[in-house]
Picture 1: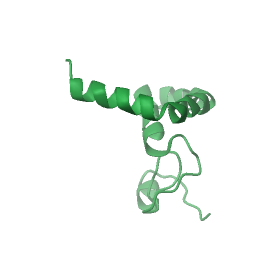
Picture 2: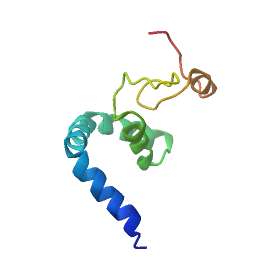
Picture 3: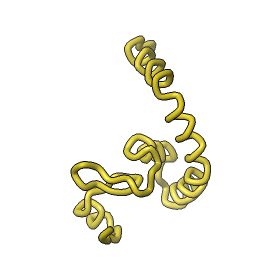
Length: 89
């Protein structure tokens, strides 16, 4: 499917944020190796690794204005549902 709106948006984003994207690509290498292994071990689709790129630009110490934290931007209640430990920082 040829979607010019999406294509133009991607081109504009890549042009405007080229330095940011280059930093994310560089930052992703060690994380993606670890993430891919865990995902394969647990049957999670590999493409889910890009959620961390979208949510936090792969920043492990990211914090949203509403309190979501980490690369995956979990809220504490959601993290507990999935059995993740929640600590204070």
